[in-house]
Image (tube, rainbow, N blue to C red; front, side, top):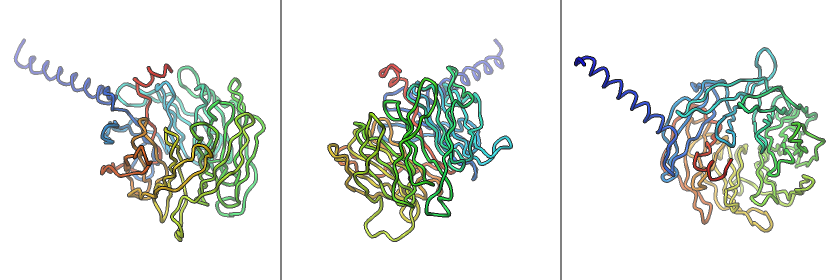
Length: 395
């Protein structure tokens, strides 16, 4: 072998070795490592969905890079088996129609996303998507369209033509924000029997019976909330006896007792997510129950960019304010708790940062870990189920 060929061969080996290390690094094999994906608004330099490694022992994020280029992927989710990722493309027009889109990707070993297909969401500005617990159906809440769409998912991960479509009608008292229906979320009940839909425009929460065989929504129960509050997102208690509703315009968390058999909601408490005597402007956003079931977190946007921390009385379901922690940025549209329950990551949409907070597992209180990751217009974080957890849970 000549010297030149030997050098070339050596370089090739180094390139291959480096590529293998990149692949191994993308999906961290150590027990404290996990991959997460970040959805964004593609309006200030972002190109789509980004991937990061997350070290649960330190709370540190390290960039893998752009996982997929796609427009306005404001909400992203993964399948339970960790093979596929789905995105809501929050657009007002797609393929010449007044609608956004839903996209499917296969998750590859290097952290990249392989595009599978994209369909019209059947309504403008899909703000939220979810999968039912069988993984066979995707449900989209089209905010501006004022409707819901249900899509079957094939074994290859692709999204099929809709199996159902439901249009909401009506309005509420705020003529600027509530001129029509605005479903903001669709949450499948833990037993897969109901789909709960907060409608910001109607000041109502719809509880649809769900047929997981045919992918159909039945006639809903409807729970009304105080006019002008604007229901946005909700979360179930760990024991499924209670539902916690975040109201965007009212900045209130409403606690409901939940009838598992009928899907009924009965209000038992309303509590503010803001400091006492707060006088500024605020719109609340995300809400999530800690994996332990003992704490609840809610985000505030506006003059009080913060995460409100509540303790949960597990017997009564009622909340008590424990802390209001600044997010060190503007407009925390979304946040996510990591699978270990030790960290809360908040996306500050208008200051282009992700900030991580350590969770005190005895009190639920938050302390920033000192890292501030720069990313344009982050709007959603989803953790990829680890290969280890997949084996343990036998998905």
